[in-house]
Image (tube, rainbow, N blue to C red; front, side):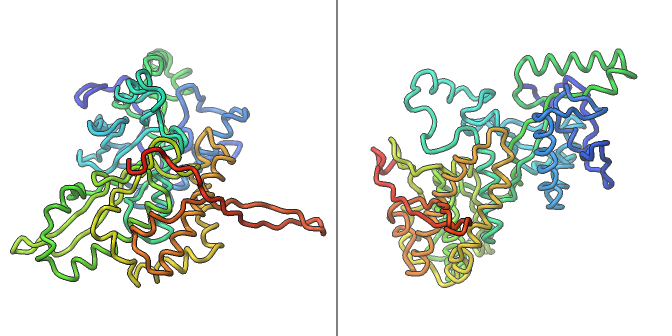
Length: 432
């Protein structure tokens, strides 16, 4: 890995690429998408191969998602500008994958970028722990219920669910493409980028105008960084629950219930007490007066089946005292109008489809299974909210998936029906 003090191998191209008046190629493609192309993509003219057309379509869709949020768009521009000024992202030491703190022009952390190819089971993961696990214990490699190397989609998908249900827990997260010499690239990629730079310097009027400069961008998730937070495992032990006000307890309970709904809907297999954050403000007496919950690290969610092999991947918040209290009227009244409407649920699934289909290896059949699990979770949440069950009672409900089946009608049309499939197989370790 390169440190921040080292000079980049190549001269990055101009940071923004977000022109106020985007220019189009003769075929109608937005030229801003070219900044996401590899170093072998010519600047002049567009290849008509299917793979390039697919890549350009994905790049334009990513730009559309980013530009739809003006604050997030400004964040991306500041990160790209900082990289151009050699203020490079820094590798986060914690965790089992390559994730990076991204900074703005003032060197302040503004986001967390998680490239797809540096995920725990990605081929460019800079951390050696997963590689060692793969070599020494292949039988325990990966999670059998998840699609491998789609953590960045899970991060963005969780943000989409949070936004759709107005939960206000997940920091804004979107799929982006970003390049930096600080990222972990193969030796071949770095040699290619260096060769392109030298050729462009030698022939600036020919090759220099036709070859894309720099290392190839990486696709991944960018999550807005939240300041002033600590792990829930730390804060929960420090809060003097016998001294805080009833309003403080009520605020925490309502946010906690929304966290429960989010994790349950997306079937988060990695929600422990270290990957959701709490931010508090204290009064003059040192007693907390306000509290805010943030749900981060949502990359191990959206399984295509319920866990049924070795581990159950339980929700660790289920062991808290707050999980034994019934869902409040506020939470039920806010979520039932959406989750109780099948059309709204299908609207959410269409939004998730737009996110998940950005992946080059998108499989519609696997996605349908993932959404079948989500529909099954929706059914249980509806029942829990209507009966005012507790979060602990919710997680004890039978696991099920709801699949859509289409049938032909005598008149030549078709109709769809829902089929619920209850998971009968249980994991070997139910509490791990």
